[in-house]
Length: 133
Ligand SMILES: Cc1cc2nc3c(=O)[nH]c(=O)nc-3n(C[C@H](O)[C@H](O)[C@H](O)COP(=O)(O)O)c2cc1C
Image 1 (cartoon, rainbow, N blue to C red):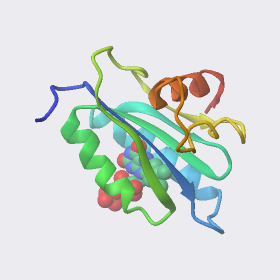
Image 2 (cartoon, protein in one colour; image 1 turned 120 degrees about the horizontal axis):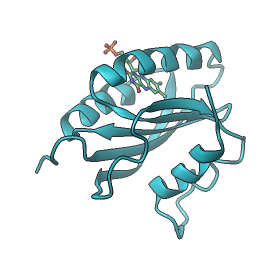
Image 3 (tube, helix red, strand yellow; image 1 turned 135 degrees about the horizontal axis):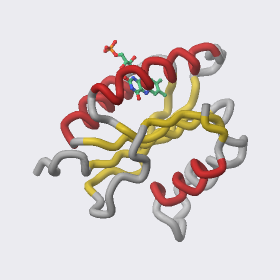
Image 4 (cartoon, rainbow, N blue to C red; image 1 turned 60 degrees about the horizontal axis):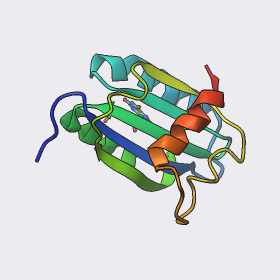
């Protein structure tokens, strides 16, 4: 079943490809900042120097459509969806944000170990102390 408009959230983690150029991060951020609001997608993209962690929020159709393109983007690898679904508690990040976090901030998300907080909740904690650009 397709979730109603603007209620779907998807969080994933991935890695910049080895020898990936840092400048690609800037390009990705530029595209996301330009394209996402036009598609009604909000959320946030964090980069810690080697890993990306991105929350996409919007209608299920637009989030899944964008994720389909992001997944096959050769600039990153090991794309792993951490959480996806319609969560009734509204948008976490009503506008689009991107920024940098510390090297170990994503460790708790980059593991298969069970955690007390849901992945999206953990992400919101990291996002709150990240440098938003
Ligand atoms: C880590 C990562 C995050 C990305 N995030 C977005 C995003 O939020 N919005 C977006 O439009 N493209 C994003 N992209 C770029 C897409 O993969 C793709 O290049 C872009 O949507 C253009 O797709 P198209 O050439 O099929 O039109 C991201 C790419 C990577 C590697």
